[in-house]
Figure (cartoon, rainbow, N blue to C red):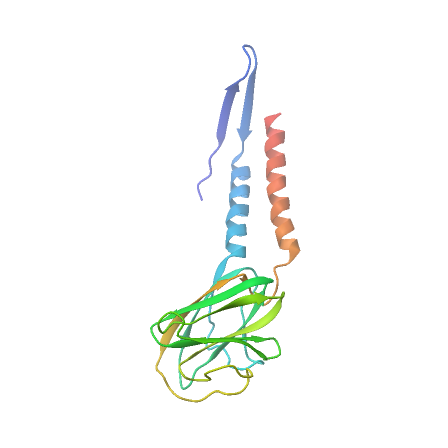
Amino acid sequence: MAYILLRITIRYSPATYFTVNTMKFKIALLTAALVFSTSAFAQNYAEVGDAGQSIATAQDTGSGSVTSITGLFSGSGDVDFFNIYISGGIFSATVSSSTDPMLFLWDSAGNPLLFNDDYFGLQSHIGGSFADGDYILGISQYANGYGLHFADSGWSSDFHGTNSYTISLENTSGTSVPEGGSTLALLGLALCGFSWMRRGNK
């Protein structure tokens, strides 16, 4: 990262000059805070290995805002389960894939809430208003597990080929809600930077 030592002289009266010295570490500090805050709270989650297809083996999706999930259908009758946190209000999930995917949403106990197949052509979409809490998002290929059913039942072993997918999400976080301390730490870091800048201006 390139650092800049910036010195600005501003004349605000005929006889007096106001000098602002911005040290390189101040610029680096504020830049780092901005970059960290952007990356920490908006992210794509990529499937690790092969996500499980049961309540017990659903794959956690970390923490922070999750805007999309990318994964791969692999093997016979592959179904992928992901643990997500819905932050209350309107939730939606839309899948894009070269195959014919289906989307499911269950509560944390595996009770069925939403199912869709072929909302946009062969692509699926689910959405609705939900209370804050942990949920399970599932995806399979037609017609493996078609319809609303308990999460741990209703699946077949049909093989539909290896295909990738991307699920775009709204109002969704990883399994764990971001800790307030992380947000406060970023705000504190920024405030410290501005405080040092003000001292340098005196």
